[in-house]
Amino acid sequence: MDVTVSELLELFLQSPLVTWVKTFGPFGSSNQDNLTMYMDLVDGIFLNQIMLQIDPRPTNQRINKHVNNDVNLRIQNLTILVRNIKTYYQFLFFAIVVVPYIQLHIRPFFPPPNIIAQT
Image (cartoon, rainbow, N blue to C red):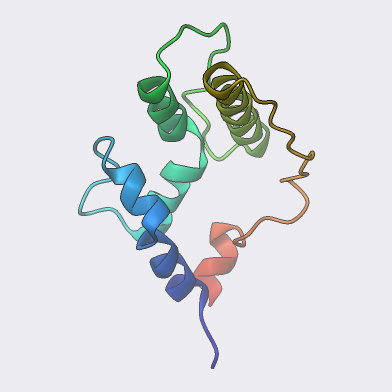
């Protein structure tokens, strides 16, 4: 059974995680394609907004709102998200969360959009 990238993307966007994320507010529009919705999710902006709804305590870290497909800015946003989640858990449960360092820029889950267009 050969699964294409577009089928994997469709499965991901129908996953329980994405369904849960959609409950926090508008995520993508009905006329967006799956790749655009995926990129809107993984740039970290919407996920950080969700984290602010969960834990509205002020933070001194500002997310990059104009990622424009810049991998470094995306990684910074996701790093801020992980840090905020860890801080929230430490505050709420008095527990320390240990997360190993992951090099996101080495092995992305999906190929860049130009490769997806070729499949």
